[in-house]
Amino acid sequence: MLPIAVDAMGGDHAPGEIVAGARRATDELQIPVVLVGRPEELGDTGDLEVIAAGEVIPMDAEPGTSVRTMKDSSMIRAAEAVRNGQASAMVSAGNTGAAMAAALLRMGRIRGIGRPAIATPIPTPGGLPTTMLDSGANAECRPEWLVQFARMGTVYARDRFGIERPRVGLLSIGEEAGKGNSFVKAVFDLLTDTGWAEAVSAEWIGNVEGRDIMTCQVDVVVTDGFTGNVTLKSLEGAMRALTGRLLVAIDTNDATRAAGRSLGPALDEMVAELHPDSVGGALLLGVNGVCVISHGSSRAGAITAQFGLPPRWCRPVWSITSPPRPDEFRFRLGLNRSARLVWLERGKCRQKRISNEGRWDATRY
Amino acid sequence: MGRDEVLALVRDRLADILEIEPADIGEGDSFADDLDADSLALIELVEALEEELAERSVGFRIEDEDLEDLRSVRDAVDYVVAKLG
Image (cartoon, rainbow over all chains, first blue to last red; front, side, top):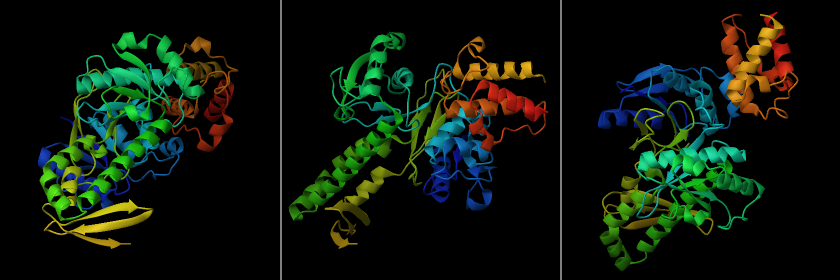
């Protein structure tokens, strides 16, 4: 298997956390990785190969311009490694727009696709994940692109999750056909009239609402990248807030703490299933190569998630992604190790330290 | 490389990017208004032209500060012809 080209300089915690995650993937899971970045800044890379790249595209850089002017950047070099057959895929936690532009310009587009889209699997309690796209590659979209997103999302959901006839919905503010702004209405008409669903064996179910995403009522949700990104981060925030509040409730008194210890394993499982990071990075669909875009705040300790990709687009590949959430939450429950819980309460940031005995030591800062 | 050849090259690459027929691209067409080409499509075009023309003219490059002046197919052709000398 060709190695995965990891943009070691991309992300809020690069390169340290990215390199650590890449080493872990290689050491523990035997996933071949080649790092791309400034060799002198990468620290101890172990036995990993390094492709030298002298520049770093900042997180706030304008995507098109930066890709044009920073041709020796880690992101561009990673995309070129895929294009040139040196790597099977690229992974980046850097500037999302730039990653999209780099992949688009170096790997090329799949014919029939105006713009690639980020496909994010959203955890669903008791069911298969719902795939949402676009999760942020294109803040502004044309209506016809969302039909393309629907087609790509259908193929992805079928090939990755085995859903034979994925149900596809359009994210709107109501289920009725007339709901939404002018853009959503234009997309609705296109999705209703163009016969795309029959072509890819999808079931077009019309508008869906944000509350439907984490249910089993829909398999693929299409939206523009702006709305998709806002939705994704809202869900992340809600999940974190809910988890934090649950832990506070568990810490109410001795009885609830005892109950928390009993519920610990089940809660661990729930958190592992529903936490946004449990699905790892998201695939950029529509480029002629494999590009995985990770959260900008990705840390190492990295878990790996396998991507079962559409075989006609690319070869199977692994990706290196976000934090070891299940462990982190187990620690936070105070069952076996010291850890710290941080949350917001009435607008103030609070934290609690969990001792080895599972007791809490609250402080405010 | 003559002007006609440059025009054919620009049409060909642009048609490939926009997935339309070269014959549907007129020399006077505006990228934005007539061809519906957005900024990323133009960057695709510029990169494709640079790659193609670098083989004929070493170091051929379309300067980023000039991009905003390229608003039509004719602008692009004139620019490339001038750069090639």
